[in-house]
Image 1 (spheres, one colour):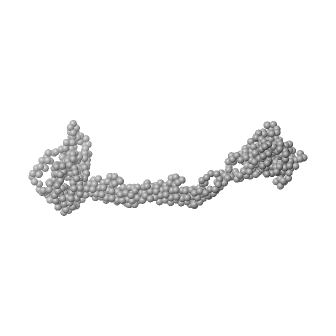
Image 2 (spheres, one colour):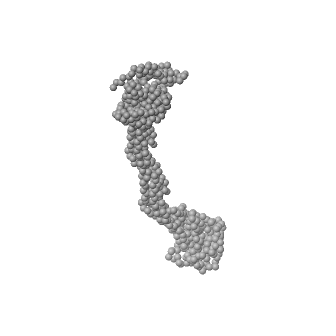
Image 3 (cartoon, rainbow, N blue to C red):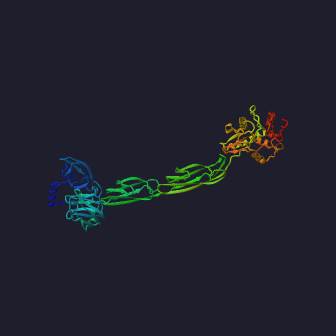
Length: 588
């Protein structure tokens, strides 16, 4: 319906428009230009660089440079444009806003303002986006309706003009009540009944005549949902939200967001997200809770509970193994002691290992402890125990006995003659036990040390010792011991056993002295020093220096004179079946 405006009011409006009042934005000494702006609707308000100037089309003086020009009117889509102002020149700008937004339903209260008619009115914020109109649109309710309609609630009202705040403070409004705010008296308020606010139907967002204006401010609306309200640690869920009639929208623990949208979130603990949509018409809040399962699950198991371990010397002859299997879910870190960090699922081959050195039985438990953890602070622990049984045994013993040679044998001309049958038997036992031992102690070697009695020159005895050691080595090689595992050394007549040592050895010999040996200490002493010692390395085990008193060739070994070659050759060929027969050398 067309409204009739009194002549006096029309003259006042015309006079103000004719004056072309412009803000003083340029400071003294600055180069300036002008902006001539035409707006539609004509009640639209102009902001320069975010500061409220005044309503309507106008010409204003601005400092030279680029300025942000905003044009706002509630119920319309605002526009902001950058305008270059040149010194001494006038820039033209036409801005036509487009109406937007649905009608707004009550019940309503009304805010009436007095004083500063050109001041912009902002509700619940200080930026142009919170603009709802200017004072002149809401300062009269006599003949023409000038209503700023709001839903019941408390509002932070700010009146600002030409970059300056006129007044700012809270205004509480009830449905069916008008609150009159006097800007000239520091925001003093009084209230009156506004019964019509209880009956008004849906109103357009902006309706104005020459002297009337109705602006119903819409309260913000908000919706918030989570695609999944229950997640495991590390998983994400999708938040979706929608708001309307809001200027600023934020979600707690997310930050500022667009008015509508979606976002993936990965909470580490149960959390409530709150959507806050704030606009001129108030604040709308919605919440959604996402629960987080922080407890990992874990399994740890062995394919068998017990394994065996058996070691002989240096050789492991039996070493069972078991498979350790594990899996974890809702976890991002898994450790298994003593394995360390592992994947969240997998398996490992566990070999039986003893917990001791030396020899003896093996009987131990090995505990594997699995800990699954996640970023949410959840942990799960599992254990598995592997029982290891078995033994660690020494390598088979090597039987070592010293060898004895007849006087002056082996000769230089007959280096292969001199190792008689009984001594070959001794070397054969040493070779057999060494090979047995070698399976379990592969680093072992034999040291063969030749000796000679004190008779004869030093050089002769040294060479004789070398032949004796070499003959023993060759026999050991013939019995299957690799030559590289045998070393030789010649002592000559050094390192002699003295007579007291020999007597002590004879007293410990379980074999009785034959009659021809008794009371002949000198000959016996000499016989003990015509020998080869065998040493097992690296153990340092030395051969026993036991004289073969009861051997069939013992007298050939013992006699002081050099035996005939044929006698020694015969002694070297005595068969095992005739070992009990004494070799007679008396005729030689």
